[in-house]
Image (cartoon, rainbow, N blue to C red):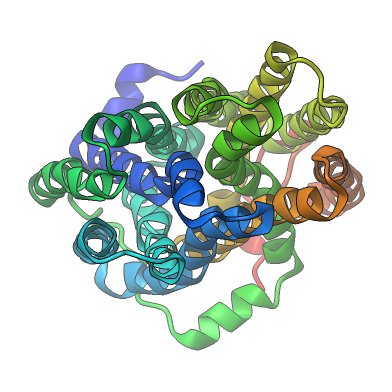
Length: 411
């Protein structure tokens, strides 16, 4: 049982809150095109593949830029990196509001919104570096729960566009919460005194040379990539498959997104209690089963229930992965956060592309959901194979970290 008083005293409440808010508003902006895609697609007469590309590009941009922000986090600290990230996020919002008048323009906006997605590489180390190993899962789960910002996009983006009669204005209105959070972050966030020494490019190579890095990348592509990809694509899915209006389609997407957002801290907490390995194997099984049944394209409410559970598993899986990552790579948190986060972004890029492109070529969403289910199940198989070696080095009984061997694994 986590001692709440001890947890609060062991870290910095202002930085934890700032991390959450920065992540929250960034996620809101990162997936802004997801709910708006139906309206944009109507204006530009987009096919299934073009709609998928539009909502996938922010994930690609975030994936690339997370490596940059991860490097900056180690060089100048997470607070300064977060400030830079929020300032740069103004660019796509202003451009989408005032200057975007073609699909090419919107592709540019989509790619640049990746700056908001890159917030992951600064927000999580800002929180993580304040807390001891036994509270990593909870601290990162709380900060990472900022992915709940997606809920604001799906709930309000299309309603605001409908109210003002123009989806462009939504980008301008989104500047308001960004500015508010910017000033809160500026005055309440504080870098931990336990900052690791700045690392060099060769240190990235050392981390990338380790097999575990790529395994964590794969695992996070399925959990975080699945969550962010679904968050961006579900409005299109509900509109296309069930004929819902843009607002109603986004509302159904919100139901599923809530599960993935709110259960992330629970995933981190349960991983602290029962071990991240055991937790992840259960969650991948749940995700795979739910997506496989969704592939049958049942009635609307059945599909929503299945996707609700699947995204709940993805959200908890995000917390579980990042309960393990800082333990395995305790001296390279900034680097590994950027690398694994980038992989998660790539997952968010490929998921809409898989669903959208296969829908265009086959006329059905079934093949896409079956492929996604198979990927989740493959993670169980891979984890079952590698956990034997992990238990000999840095994982103890039940999947919990051996505290005395964390740093002994090395390169």
